[in-house]
Image 1: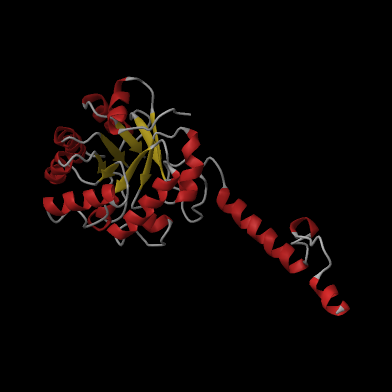
Image 2: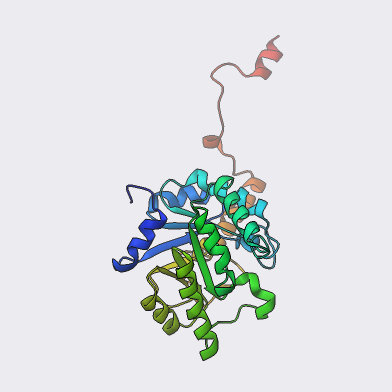
Length: 281
């Protein structure tokens, strides 16, 4: 268990220590409270909440209002981890001014410690401006879910020379723009290792192999709560989806059969019951 809150500078300082950075997503107060005493380094309130919590097909419908509300919720349960909020689709792509304004909203209204945005060289002007405004920025390159329509789904990126070179250039451009770390998603492990070795800020992998400076997963995937699909890069450390369903089925059965609530779940009156008083009167 850590003794003080993790900050963006302390994440940068971990680059050369050999101690891996560990991150997870969370989307509400209840899970933040559960994660808080574990010593997790980073909690990301990802726009993946669109699929995990809101039932959307992808992340694109998520709004700034969604992100602010969920980030504030997580903040109330988190006392130690660096809290990073995602900038959702079309909250930063239009202009530098829009990007800085919405990043500021995630800090001021969402109470985040830092923001994350997708994109490399095409977004460095936004990253630079946000950093100049005093807001730490986490980059995100490789497989970028907000570009799902452009990519035609969620294919692994960087498998060929030209795309691998572009991803490496993106990483270096984000570093130069002032990002304090970069998420590498859905790229070959060898490419992730090259990038990790060549830049001075930490890389945090998701589907990018073991040689990144840290790892991140969607909490609900790790816990086995996604009943529809488990990506190749996910290791399920529990199977809570089936356990929750089983618990609810047991509850339904016991309520319908009269087993629950039992006497141990029922409050007793210390004095004569109301009916006995009324009948005596």
